[in-house]
Image 1 (cartoon, rainbow, N blue to C red):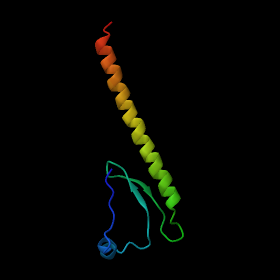
Image 2: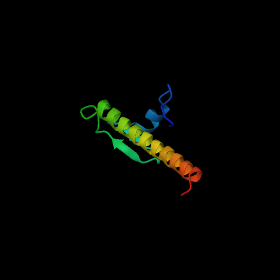
Image 3: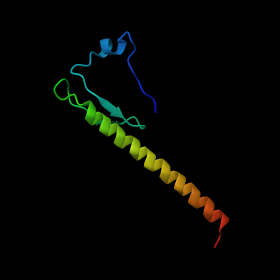
Image 4: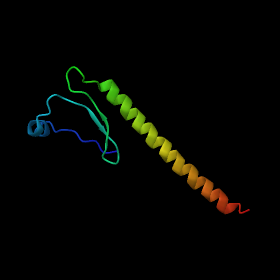
Length: 81
């Protein structure tokens, strides 16, 4: 999963002047999966972490489902009824 981080020169911060600060979690389809509240009072890294954990768990479940489907398909091919 790609991660985008501002460089040490803070060029993105300077260009967009993100104020108040927010945390966003973006999914693999480039949709916002979590939008944190404006900082500093609603800045909640723990909530963003939970959202990221949930997103990663959902990807893991999807991956396991695809693997299970492939395994079931290969079993059916070997054991025709």
